[in-house]
Image (cartoon, rainbow, N blue to C red; front, side, top):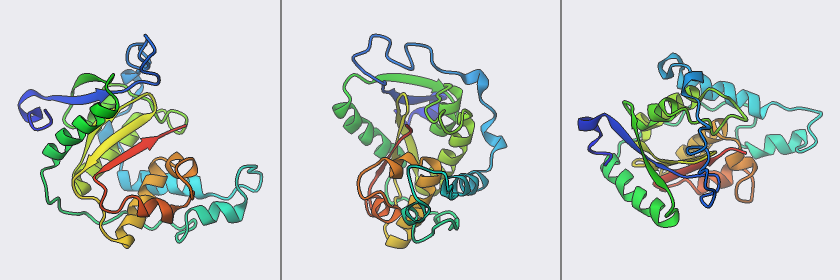
Length: 225
């Protein structure tokens, strides 16, 4: 289906819900989507966004009752508060569209109540904004910013948007990092994009541990609290 996008202009998204058992099937069935509130994807620079978000989420707040200053800096070691820049582009060794189709089957097997949505958009990244999805709203209510970063990942890593839920996003990745150094840089991008992946993900809650789980893995998942 992803490979057919060029001929149809329709991007396929598997739509997951906050609670698949809920008759409203939030946010899709309940109408909690806001395309009219989003800006233009092209108006945002992904490199600037990631650097800005990184600075915001690594800032030390002496009044923070969740993380001490030392602990906050330890989370993003070895970089601390210093933005390391984006990971280098990688060439995919497999078809990004075929991988997306294969991952869609895997996702459906784990989320059988997902529904198929078709969005008129140039890419999966832009489909998120066109559809009015607002999963990261607790961090920023303009999905176009997140679409800009995902679009950059489409170009650098062969990423494809496969599924999206109330506050979740699932991508297939044709060219994931394969070295510790590249994985750390990708992990830094993920932290800037979705800090909850590390703050509230699997223990230990550190960038280094998260990077180990990215190496050679062909799908990325994000969840915003």
